[in-house]
Amino acid sequence: MQNLYSIGNFPAPKLQRSLAEQAYDILEEMIVTLVLPPGAVLSENELIEKTGLGRTPLREALQRLSDVGLIDIVPRQGTKVTEINVSDQLLLLEVRRELERLIATSAARRRTAEQSSLLSNMAGEMRRAAATDDYLLFLRVDRAFNQCVAESSANRYLVKAINPIHAMARRFWYKYYRPYDLPIAAIGHAEIMEAIVAADSAAAGAASDKLLDYVVAFTRSVETRD
Image (tube, rainbow, N blue to C red):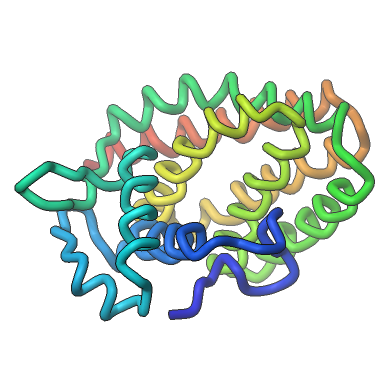
């Protein structure tokens, strides 16, 4: 199975990824893009057949997915994809706002030249996604951006704290976004990257808050629609 997150010019930060990490990427993509929808009961044998993964890396990936809240593993009852809950998403956003601002401002101060170059390229791709309404490009660059900017903050505790929130946010966005949301989100991400590249921590923090203002409004609109 092809992993859309690995397509293009934005490789994962680690050059060599373990089978368990590859398994995680594949299964997370399937959950985020609702190939494995909320409430789906997961069978190890079916996942092995569908993905070509071995049992050991598959189990490691499922445990990680449980840790980030995308699946529930209930002993003697099975494994199930978690439901999407708008109220929970709003609570996550309270935490995400503070973490994202700290990540953005820290990255503006600490990013390396290599990270800066990568973020500059990503910003251009985000603006291209906005101009062409390319959702898959947006999704791919968004995940690569989340990884790169968190690592650019040079704070492993921030990376560990934000990863589960990003996983939940990607799935929520995929389920509920509307065509006119894509340019807003893509340009908002590009503005954060451009401020980080410019080493302007104040602008990076402001751009992060601006994007989260939109995400909160978007999430509340879903609550109203439901």
